[in-house]
Image 1 (tube, protein in one colour):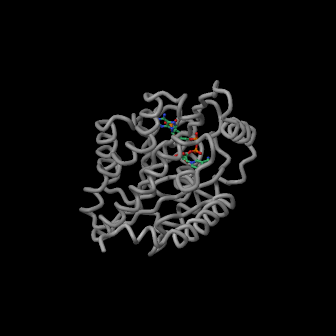
Image 2 (image 1 turned 45 degrees about the vertical axis):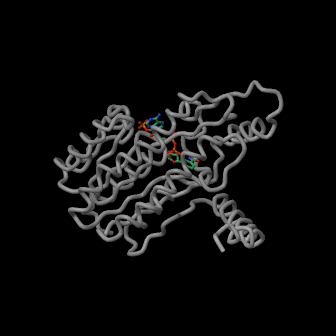
Image 3 (image 1 turned 90 degrees about the vertical axis):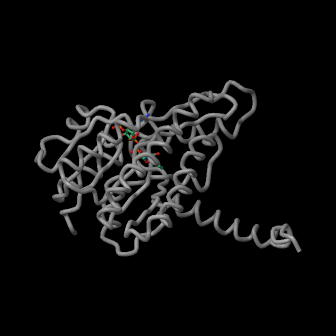
Length: 279
Ligand SMILES: NC(=O)c1ccc[n+]([C@@H]2O[C@H](COP(=O)([O-])OP(=O)(O)OC[C@H]3O[C@@H](n4cnc5c(N)ncnc54)[C@H](OP(=O)(O)O)[C@@H]3O)[C@@H](O)[C@H]2O)c1
């Protein structure tokens, strides 16, 4: 492994982000990591060679803060080789009962922060003629479950954005992967991370049932954050990393089921689809 690489990881005080940066630091990489609270982040990481670790207090919803964090990373390490847009949170509820502000807030963190970090880091990577961007999406962005409409929309946006920037920046030697996990054992399903808008509307049984099911799954998720972190590190060694990488057995089954169903539906409606063009 080429441990001279410099990583920039968002949302690193817990969960996947924290597990990743700890493994990176243990392996000898230089790491800039963002959190809303740099003290919590430093405390969570523990004693470490400060020449290789740059904890950054960053409000990812503020473009100037993102700018400053990239500037500080370059001042400390001189380059940025791998960016992991990891920060994000879930939101469960019916769209009728989620306020517009709540929807804007989650898009600001899950989507706009990712877009803005990418905007800020691309000039650096273009000048290096190299770089690798990993955006953390979710299997929910490809195959949604009842009750997760807004969260799924944010992660579908991350996936679509990733696909197109991958095409845009290929000529500069920059690679992009969207990683799409199913349930991983992190803080994701806890009250401090997940925004749950309890439905007061009669009906909506499918929404209420999945919410209960997901909440009771906390602590039992099959996904192993340690393995996810190792896979992220392995990806950076690949000459030809995937555009999409689903992580977890559940993610594989859901994605595979949807691809089969979509392929069949596409063919079933083929005549209508192509019949929409001018003759
Ligand atoms: N765990 C899963 O089952 C699962 C499945 C699919 C996708 N994902 C995605 O994986 C990523 C990491 O999540 P995780 O599982 O590690 O969950 P987690 O333990 O809750 O950690 C989420 C991280 O995201 C940051 N974050 C959360 N809310 C934020 C907010 N409002 N503003 C800014 N940053 C915020 C936090 O950073 P700071 O507190 O350090 O600022 C935190 O370290 C997320 O993008 C999530 O959507 C997770």
